[in-house]
Image 1 (tube, rainbow, N blue to C red):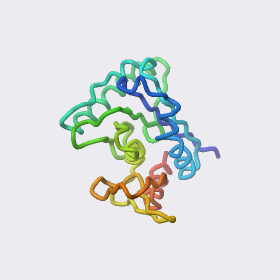
Image 2 (image 1 turned 45 degrees about the horizontal axis):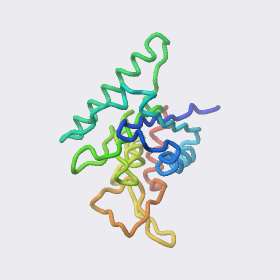
Image 3 (image 1 turned 90 degrees about the vertical axis):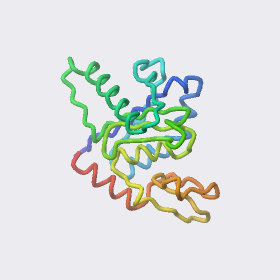
Image 4 (image 1 turned 180 degrees about the vertical axis):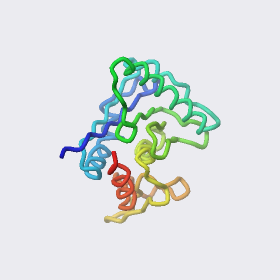
Length: 192
């Protein structure tokens, strides 16, 4: 039986309007798409949406001293958009399989580069931290900080759910989730 696919819709905030969509995909998402397909045994589509293609979403004011308030506002904006877009088509969005990430040029505030609902369908991530998009996507698929890891394969590398407390510029991005987070993601998707 063919499993239903995963989708990640990445809305490029208008502050990224001058960035090349293909370059952003290659830098932040190409490895993630393959990783999620390997973990879930499902096809995954990651679609980067230009600001001009979704102005109601790309203009969201994500800057906030409270990252939870920024996320709540983003969730409301996404839900309103989906309701308007699909209400007449009788389409139901599966929130376990379909995720919406706002990709931004700058951080939410001076302390937070990204935020996401754990197991939820929305997140915000800045490109100021190289693994922030994957970190927030991991949370949306239920991954945790506690199950992050530091790997050694000729050099040390960090899995995406490591927190800044453990960050050092001497380590690379592992470009894979830890074995524990892979299993958490797999279990999260089993019932989807």
